[in-house]
Length: 326
Ligand code: PBG
Picture 1 (cartoon, protein in one colour):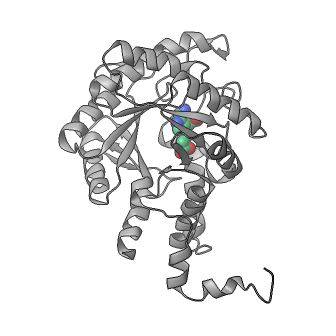
Picture 2: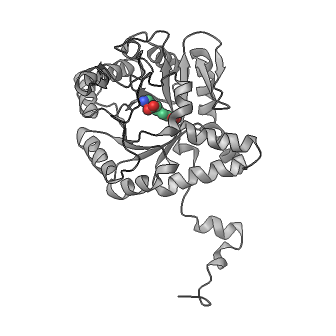
Picture 3: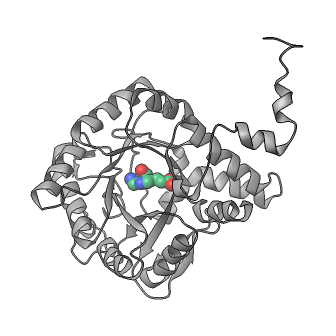
C-alpha cells in the first residue's frame, strides 16, 4: 500500500486516534528515583549541577521516599556519602554505614517503596576508584570480596534489591553466592551490565563526591565505541545470576539498549544519568527547551528502545505529570 491509497496521516488526525495506536507507554510504575544520602539531620544540600536534586540526611530522605510512594513510584536507589573515606572503602560495608542506616530507617518508615542499594566502592574510597588499588590499578579479584560484603550488609539492613555498578568481572556471581549463603536467596540482583566509561556521569560525581583522584574509569567501565561487547557483558551477568540487567547511560546508548532488548528476555533497565538530567535542566532554565515535553519525550524514547524500567532524576516530576494527565 502506497500513497495515495495509504495515508499514514489518517490515524494521526486527533488525539483519540493517536492514543489508540500508541505503541509505547510510560507509567510511574516504570520509574526508579535515585537518592544521595549523607549523615546529619535536617540536611538538604543542593547539588549545583543538578537543580532539584539534593544530598539528604536520612530524615529528609524519608520525606522524599514518602513523596515517591504518593506519586506511585515503586522504587528508589540509594547512594551513600560516608563521613570518612579510606583505601578499603570501609564505609561501604559497615553495619552502621550511611546506606545501612538509611535502609533500616526507610524500611521502617516507608515500607511501601522498594529499596535498591547501589553496590560500588567509589563513594567510599579515598582515591575515588570503584575498587581496591594495587599500584595505580583497580585489583579486580581483591575487590570482589568487598563488593559481596557491601551487598550482604545492605541486604541485612533491609535492601529489597542490590545493584552492583562497579564493573568488576565476576561480581554478580560473587554477590549471588554471598547472598545465598546468608539466607538472602530471594533477593534479586539488578546488574549494571553494560555500563560505559561516560563523561555524562560528571554531575553525579559532584553529588556523590566520588570523582577519581587520579586517572579515569576506562580500565573497568566500557569503551563508548563498543556495542557488541555490551552483549558479551550482559551474557556474563545473566550467566552469573543477574535478575535485571541495565544499560547506562540511556539516551546516548539507545542502540545498545535496543540490541540488548532483542537478545535477552530478562527485565531491562536503563539509567538516564546525571549529565542527561543536567543538560535538559540547563536548557530549560535558559528557556531553550520546554522541560516537560522534552523530559517525557526522552523517557518515552528510552521505553521505546526497550527499557522496562528507567532510573531517572526526573522520576518525581514525570510521575506528577503522568498523574495530571489522567
Ligand atoms: C558508581 C556510580 C556512578 C553512577 C552510578 N553509580 C558513577 C560512576 O561510575 O562514576 C553514575 C550515575 C549518574 O551519573 O547519574 N560507580
